[in-house]
Image (tube, rainbow, N blue to C red):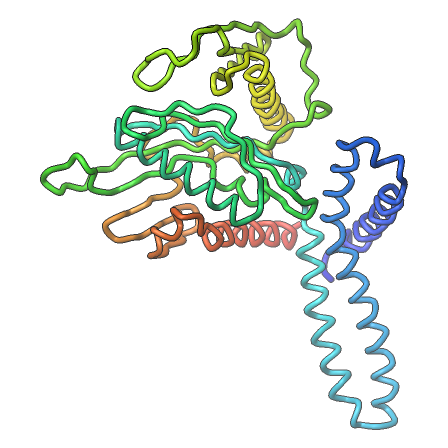
Length: 360
């Protein structure tokens, strides 16, 4: 393994693994669901490190024995060579596992999709993105909850806010969806286009790690809460009571509005989940310049000129402009087959981290 800090870091992680394993064996821990969930996720993150380290120690011991035997019987030389190759592979695997981790990788996600330039066509495309992420989540076995949704008369989406959650401790929602933030551009012939011309429009995606209450402390005195009547597509009233909620975090000016639920209490709870996620992301950006760099692609304004990905319907092509990824299976991608493009983004991220660790 390369890097003088790796043995020390490995020892720290293995000690943490043993500590988390002991904690999970304590029945009292499982009386606190939030703590048990946090420990379960950390255990799932550390398990591959423990497995790789154990395999590496075993292979090194076996290599020592094979070399001793080869000195007496040349027939064992091939086994020693195979073990040397395996050790190299395991060392590289462990090096990848010891790269700095995004502390939010194990968190669930708040995902927002908003229509941008392009009018009705942009809203229809936002609906396509909503379906794509919902289908992708289903393929991963995640749970999806709609916190707020503003549909249009033509079946599109002005905006939608989703909570995407793992069902198992070994599922990492943020680790896969964090690359989706930014402006997504679509090129296609709208159904209303009589002359067959290709139109370009865009929708914005914002992805935030969902914050637990312990992650963000919010003083109730810092909140201004307004209630109003919900409205549906075209502005028609869908509720005869003031159930919609607008929460303003006065110190930061952050505003969250929710009207999806019929109950004012439910809308308030959903709004607080989104507010915590936004405040956590803002605090991390402020405290850590690296976090700000990692989120640089999450463009807040839906401008067609600043896009992370293009969906070209005439060519059935998807292009991710950050890593040069291109594929001609757009129909499958919109049905949730996002694995290849996300893998390309994760690979580019890993290569950048490896390059950084080699230089340090």
